[in-house]
Length: 354
Image (cartoon, rainbow, N blue to C red; front, side, top):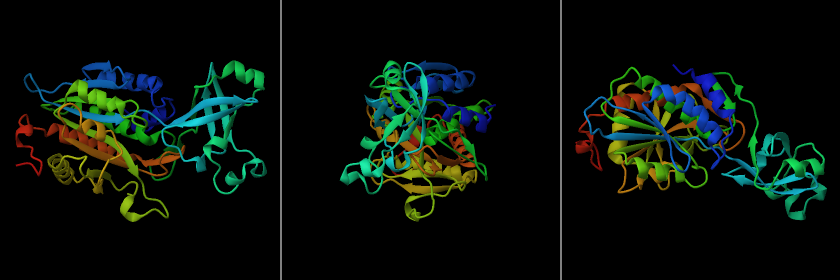
């Protein structure tokens, strides 16, 4: 049985930026190995774990995707021993000055993100947040030593340690989307003692933050009958609009919009109601901003659902999530999978289950 808190702490303490997911993939693989029947890695670095169903061959398959990649930085140039950087994935430059980082050069180097004094900045950058192109990373070494240890293109990850908060919440980096990887892992745990007719592909996808290439290629390769993207969504905090954010600790969200199959949404809602799992409907009128956008249009099209975990301070090094929402997400996934009839696809319509 996977213990959520230590596993999640280890997930967010492990590097694995978009396109360079190997360190975190190895951790997930070692955890999923005893929970699945087959393991493989795609050509783009996504991890596939197959949990076989109990019905006779050929079995229908459901793909549950949670992206494992993280946002971060990359070295673009070295100037007098300081590193100029660009972003990998979306970053909010307002929170970057003063952040601790790890520079993955010839060896890992601790560093700090700094900004020049205001009077040394160009006129347009003196007021308000300093743009990313004026920020620097200082590793504390002399210029000659930096040139020996760091190269253009080296990765930089945040190094904020996980902080266990009050009220069963956790703060730290990369909870987008390692929180969902943890939920998928707990789902696999629950399925060890549950009968399920369908095969289950648990997929930790690569590159969601930059290309969605991992989900796109895995869905094309595995050809599931159904797909579910598990991700995070905007958590409510002061000054955030009520109609666009969701409170921590009060349940998950079920996506609704053109990226989501209406019948599949109705099925998830039915299961959540049946097991009294609290949820809110999250309106997604266009692109869901998740792997579902890629899963839905793979091959000849896949009926797709989005299940999200509320998260505060998204795309910062101090993201915050409620552990109970992760557990609820895992339970909803396992109950849905367990209730899938072998003839579910025959009853699925674009409006609702007939």
